Image (cartoon, rainbow, N blue to C red; front, side, top):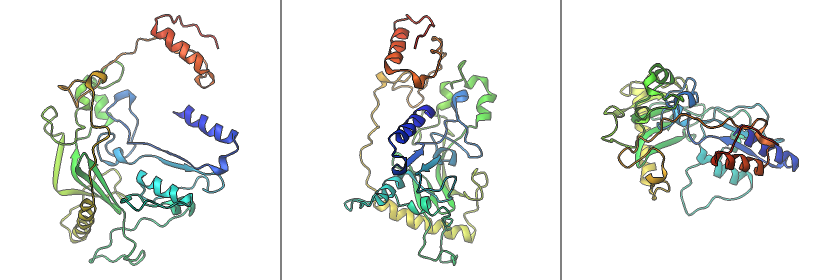
Length: 320
């Protein structure tokens, strides 16, 4: 990935279009911590891929546009990938479609102002926000798993209605039985990732919370210290969030899932009986890759290498 991104950026420079090109780099989900030696690292954040803790939903967001965005600038603005579409529409002078609800917002001010205002905390009838004014409402972000609301981000606060049990990288490596010889997890290590109870998953895999777990993400990004929802300040924020959530859900129309159909015959190490616990414990025994910089190899050369490996003809020698 590092090479491919670099190759694209070099091509933009070669075409002399870098001042006319905005580049956005982000990720679809957080690191897959349970993947043993093949995992990434979420740092102080809790959780990772397959759940809605910060380690699973907070991802890198890197934007560059020479001549427009100040190099090295950062922003504390809470943003979503849903914001990319309306932001680019605004930058290019277009207009949003009016035949549907657009959940994203234009965050171009965060990109070009360089020092945007911090996100306001929830404004309630009990707590007045004099600095930002009552019309500057906090951002509501809703995290679904299938058609169930698992978590909600509201301003500085986050609520977990349903949560997945997490396993830290340290816990994974502490038990050799959870990882294969190649450092890839065995089946039981990837079991807790479904959207709802499943008889094949551990009983404590998915937990419902009533009232929901509440955290101040700005003060506690690790989600280590749940707040007392019954305290007047927290209860006021919770009540306001519920009103906003109900408004959001009232306008929600669920379409058919585009990736909801699985062909288990095409999924390695997976059958209808084992899903959703589908993974392989593999050990690589193939040839060493050819030496040199893959970025400088031609497509023909790489295809030749792949074909020789497939035909068991690769002898370890390589000629550019």
